[in-house]
Structures are given as C-alpha cells and as structure tokens.
Length: 172
Image 1 (tube, rainbow, N blue to C red):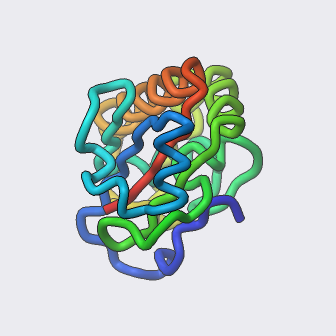
Image 2: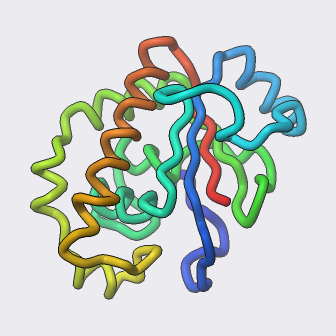
C-alpha cells in the first residue's frame, strides 16, 4: 500500500491538516539522512505553489482521486498519501517524502484529471459511509473545500515536477 498513514483507519481524528512542500534534491537528501534537519513545519517556508495547505480536504481529495479511503493504484494514490516515511512527523502521522520521479508521474496524472470529473465522483453519502475525514460531506463541500484543494494540489505537483523537486507531505 503506497504511503499508508499507520494507525489511522479506525481512529477518531481531530484537526488533521495536510501540508505539502516541494524540496530540491539536496534538501530531500538532507531530510532523508537527518529528518531533524528540517526543523520548521512543512508549511513554514515558501509560498504557494511550492508550499500547499489542503487543510482538512486531503482525505476527500484522496477518495475522489482513488475511490479508496487509504489505498489506490498508480500515481494518483501517491498524491496525498504517498512516499517514503522519513520520521514520526510533527504530529500524529509520519512525514512522507515522494521522490522526483514519482512527483513527475503524479503531476502528469493530476493534469489528466479535471474538476468536472471529480465532481462526477463526488458522493457525500458514500464518503460518509466510508468515514472519509472530516465527515462534513454535503452539497456545498465539493465547491468550498474539495475543488479548491484539488487545484492547489495540482499546482504543487506541477511546480515541483517542473523543477525536478521531491514533495514532503505531512498530516498534523
């Protein structure tokens, strides 16, 4: 299972916020060698699109991209929950580092998906039944949370892929 967040399937969540940050190959190597070298939280330095905060929309976006709560096939499954675990993270989940080759594959896969396609996949009842965090799924959540978050995610991966960057992900 790519990038599975350990221990989260049956737990109650409080304030689980996803942040992603593009890292150069040198920064990624430092983080892999010494995770403490990145002292600031993922969202600390930089500006969009190099740093993105999906807030609580991350799990819904993953669901829309993969049709699964935690798993999925191909590059889209890596966009929100993918990469090598580099440490225990800043909060409840480990930080995940996605290499430049996978970042490029994710960027290409995301580019092929449009908001209209995701809107067709949006099923608030199914998402609630699957316990997709934060379980606020109603008629307005797609337009207010998921579509804007998806666009930010695409921008992050497009930006990172164009610069041969890695992406560091965290949920705190």
